[in-house]
Image: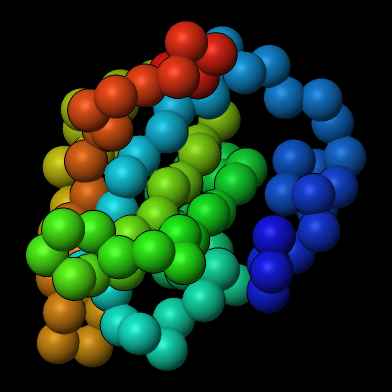
Length: 105
């Protein structure tokens, strides 16, 4: 991951069971925000193990990315808490991805 802490730091040097991870889609964040900045914003809501920001844009022309948290007990509650985050004058959009890989939750 470009600009983010190394993978060993991301998962605390421990193996993380993929079945215990929850993935969130996020978009509508400042252009100057990278993975490290995004990591700092989201880490306070739980055990964040991965941040990915796409180099492509979504269909509305906004940057987007994915977050992975580990050991989340109430996914819907966390989704609603993350969806009200503001960075500067921008409201982040955070959702559970529509299409999930069979290996991730």
